[in-house]
Length: 381
Image (cartoon, rainbow, N blue to C red; front, side, top):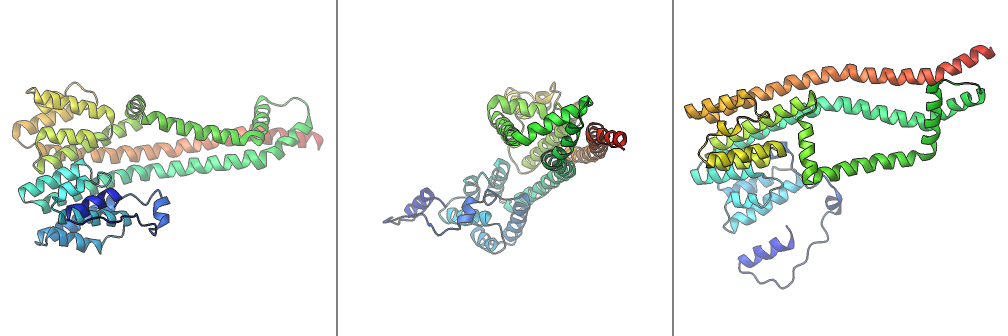
């Protein structure tokens, strides 16, 4: 808790502050650790399910939160729960208390908790949230799992390449230079790059680091984020996977919010914020404006290639039959399975591509270095 929150909490409880200092005895490592102030989906699912169980058993909210303090191991989540307890004890609702911690509880979470409080079904709202978080976690896990292998292999290749250009190839290229005579163009290029890398390797590393930082800064700008999000859904194969992820996220979140009793316009505004893509956000907000003008959701989504015809048609059926939440849940399941299939296909394609890259690298090394050395040995022998 920061000093401002502490002052408000003490003042609201009728206490006069004589002296207030931030504790310096706090864990210094936790302040320096960039991973210390985060809550994983797994921790949040566990928190939601356990809180739902306690509330459904008629345990008061404050007591339920205190019980959870003994079950949670994530230190940052523990501090958040402590602040939730203090806020609720001070008269705040649980949803308002959670809204102060947007880094942990997003708009979907807070809105469903608020709806559950109003309807007296807080335990069911927490179950919906836990189910959705689990599905999101599984979806992200599958995509990350598919990308781990190629990233690991390419990283290993990069490290091996750096070590070879720094320690191995200088000795081999020295042999070729001592030979004299005419060398193949590949050998000339390898010798030139090896010399350059040996003298200016730090410049290359700084250039790569600068490029990464520059791209990150550009993405943080409005135009940069737009171009980045547009590129993610436009590149072959991978773009199709991203589209299906966003469609699954749209359908799953909107279905959960509708089931939770959130009005459709408010639900769409929340989904626009949590979908994490500027292109889809603009389309959804444009749909909100059209709904306000008297049109349906399916009308608002129609005409945008980012939302396929199957989506708009199924949404239209859901609106006409008053089963929109169920239709959206089916759409979410469909696109989650599509993501599974596409990720499996991408993994299958990446393996031969990696082998081709390896083959090209070995071929260049053999043609440029080992073959001339072999010819030298043959002529001198």
